[in-house]
Length: 164
Image 1 (cartoon, rainbow, N blue to C red):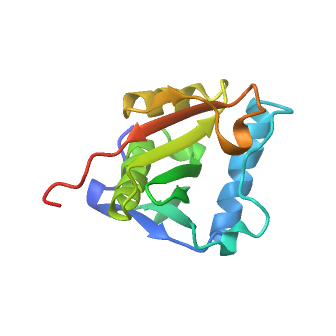
Image 2 (cartoon, one colour; image 1 turned 45 degrees about the vertical axis):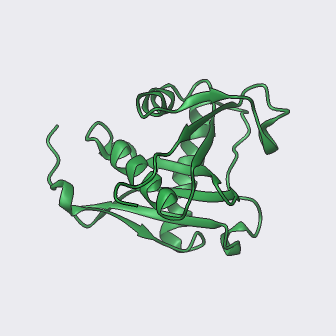
């Protein structure tokens, strides 16, 4: 399917995580995870985290349409975690997940992040394929995921920005 927009019309916009558009996207994501993997824990944002300065939430738009979201949670000065990465079903298969992931990596790199981690589940096969194709490699579970046998944790070492 051809996208009705150009790459130049795809934007990643910093948005408060408690904004109505952000809450709606995260609710859609949670419903999809629950549908795909009933009973699995949903590792969303922590209570009150929308006010934490270590979290930056982004909304992805394409041609002026809200199509997805993602967040970066800083874990250490050089390490962050991808959170809440999601592209709405009607907009999949158009390269937007790759655009979202590249945009989040660029924002992390620009903030001095060298190691970008994430957690996903074994039934998130499309997400696993995306992350692997983007250079993410399996790592030991960490943080809140250590005691969850269903957690798959991955990490990518971000190259320094060219010209930096």
